[in-house]
Length: 434
Image (cartoon, rainbow, N blue to C red; front, side, top):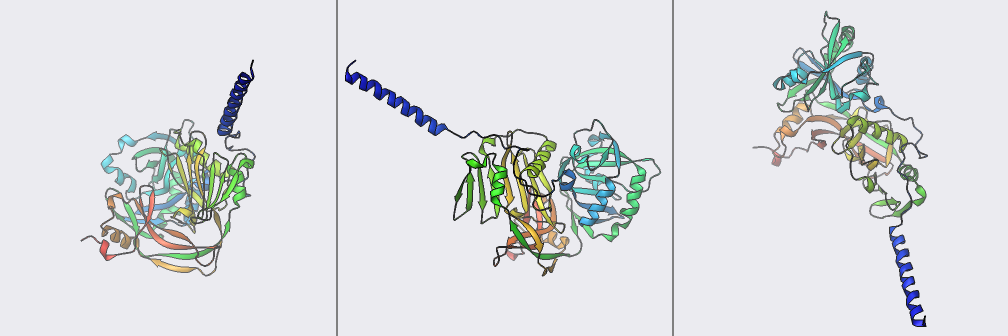
């Protein structure tokens, strides 16, 4: 073989080796295990939560003598839920077809009824740990309110209804009437002790407070979450994670596949795993359970005030909302959000701090009555009242402009449209209907 031929062979080999090495460099990824739900990951030192810790009623509504009374007080709801936990329920059956759709709202809101109202649909097979359900083959039921008539009855059995309000589905269960009579004496007979509400609306029935509402304005000291420990919890192999500091947004953590952003401006931690973008549509029961387990096993519940606020099966998303003194914090930094992908978490959003203690200088604020706010909304040209599903008092949380270790909580009125809670705007003569 001549020298020129040898050179050609060597050159060809070098080109092939170079191409092979280039391919390996561009396609190489460290070997990652899926984010474990129960592996050796960091968890904050706080008790894990179960369904009954985070799924609680938002209010109790009594219809008595043609009037409506409602309580949102944590102590009242706790006592009522404790009473219900002693009931034994059995003989569940779907009676949706027997409830005339034109009479559905009368069936739910009829005089003499008590409504135990939840923030969103709750799968009964998970909530059965809170209730004593004597049923082996429980039908697939999701509900957002429990309805019953706590009137005296000579019958041995009474009916309790689990209602999905939006879908107009009704499941009936039986309970010993002695439980209903006890509830009647303990709560229903004292319904007039609670604030009175007015009924409005046809498409969406709203109950709004008749009198002005008093709420405290607070300032809370906060503690920042240790983002390094948060990183260790969310990435399956933290040694591959690289941190990049951004002056504008905050800190970015990435292992080449997953990304965690600690946003200084919004005070939120966002985690995304693009490999899990495609969705597998599981049941609402599975979705809620794995969402609670995820927080238990990864970030923990740094703040004990978070409760289940809603889920969307189509989006495979779950939201938990912060409550302060029984009132929800409606803006984004008051919620934990999860979106699930094909086999694991796809997107996770969590405030980058938790509340410690309120400062002593709280201030009492008197808000307009729900009746006044409802009428104000009706007079606004840019609001479709048919789309308004609820009206409630809550807090807007803001960073304190003078001290980064404080947040303020401002009482506000909010209305619900779809999955969104929107702050009722201040009255502006230019927005009135004419």
